[in-house]
Image (cartoon, rainbow, N blue to C red; front, side, top):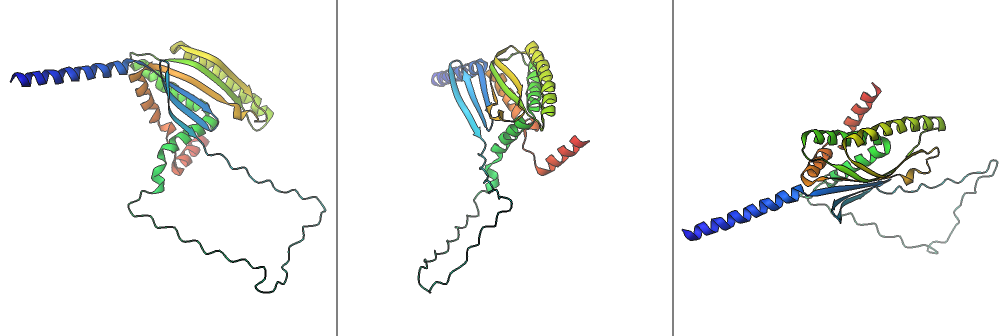
Length: 260
């Protein structure tokens, strides 16, 4: 009996130590660093001086299209090559053997479509950042405000650096869009600073009439809070309906709603 009581005391002490360590880990300040460049998103965890990259996603590089040869007006077309009579057996090359058919996949193999649902969500986020960055910012701000109202822990943004360009079809549309974006961003920045401590290293928005500086777009920032709050925020953002990969039916419905 004394041995059993001693074993129970040891187990209770170990369990209490694990719970204390878990609570301390969840209450430690944890930062999530997000860096965006065209075609690349990197997410890293920051805890004090330690930084560990969680995932880096790159879009597939676009294949350069071949340039068509420009024809000179009035120039004669290139002469077509004609076959010459060659004696049989002279200059003939051996024909390669036909390729063997690929081996059949076993029935228990998983289909190829099941390998890529994780990348579809990141592709959706990248597409939204390129097409409508204001929608992504509004989505993040909605979750941050919800956590600010329902959580005793607060968060802050450090080392925020933003360089973004506005490009439209022509110069007039670019100027109008740039003015509207500048007004909206100044209003949003003032609202964020009233709710969250924000430390910025550089915020720059400029019109790009030719689209040449689109590749220089850059967003970097560290969102820091208690670990339990950061995990909850990541869970909410990752499951937001706006950031889910859309099927053809969803895209058709969204386009119809936009037209209305």
